Image 1: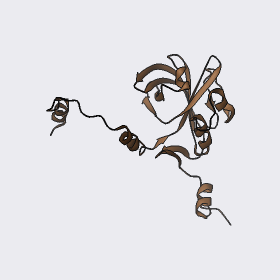
Image 2: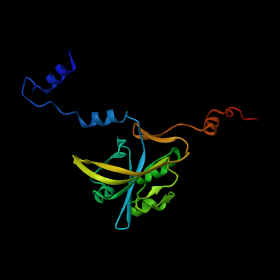
Image 3: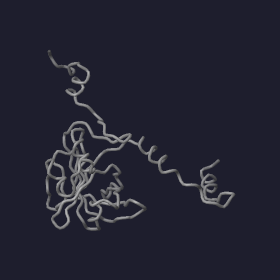
Image 4: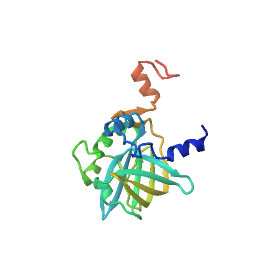
Length: 200
């Protein structure tokens, strides 16, 4: 079957005339848990009050101009302040930021400005908080907000991007946090072997 034939077959209504059944929510959630993703903190400051949350659904939309997509739950307090023109900070978390990820995911009880009591923060002229020791940071201006179902797609034009010489990345997989990338020192502690070239 050619690609065009497959597309035409997909477009044709089913013989019964009924719409295809939707995927079971639990099955969808279980399948998505197999998708490993990076972990970021997304933050902004509207009216002088910072708000932020942990997010894993972030992707590059365009290289020219540099643009990101951030998917956020519409019920979150962080989403409530977002609108076109608002400055948004995205900080990519390293392996040693697990506690911050839990904190900004709301799992430790802190809300609003209380979440920012931990961590080392930079406040650029835009006002969007950035984690100073993040693996990478992006300062964005919100271009558009597209609401769909329980979430929204936030499109951010990247004004500035920076990276650090951090260690491994924090990743989210199967409902928990894990680490991608290990330093020589971490590997030596885990295996009991000396780093290559090291002396006893």
